[in-house]
Length: 181
Image (cartoon, rainbow, N blue to C red; front, side, top):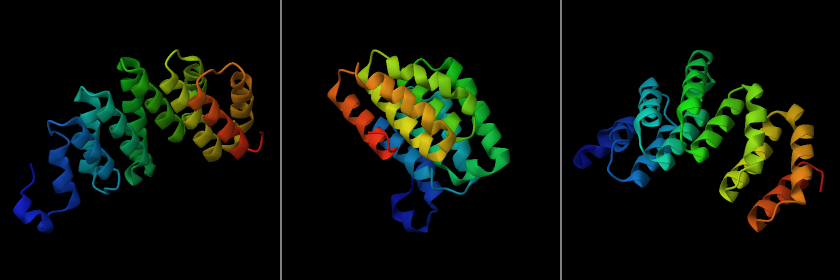
């Protein structure tokens, strides 16, 4: 735990690194989110440790998002390291939720070959996975315009069969944003 009396004298990293080991999953997740803004390589190491060792899917998901959003991952040498970690973790991860976030991260970091794997999430029996997959596809089609026709085709293809109102609404929002609906 950081020294609360001297917190004003501490770097943000020094405050958040210890919190990635807190008892509370929500505190650990918040620490991961805060570390996404860090420019210290030690923050990437802390987030990698969380992804590999934390038991909570929530915390691991936030670690993936933080690693993907980190300014550090945009440097080629770190991006390769993070892509390798995500690939390794994807194959071993039991949580479909974390696996979906890992796929989005891999694609956002340039591994477009993973897009067909993400497509499987559209047909998942858990509506939260379908909802997250639709959102990820929309975001990715904006980042990579060459994916937009395929995303529109897929979303149009499932829109009539989708029963959950939240997923249906998200599909329609993205189709509208992408200029289809």
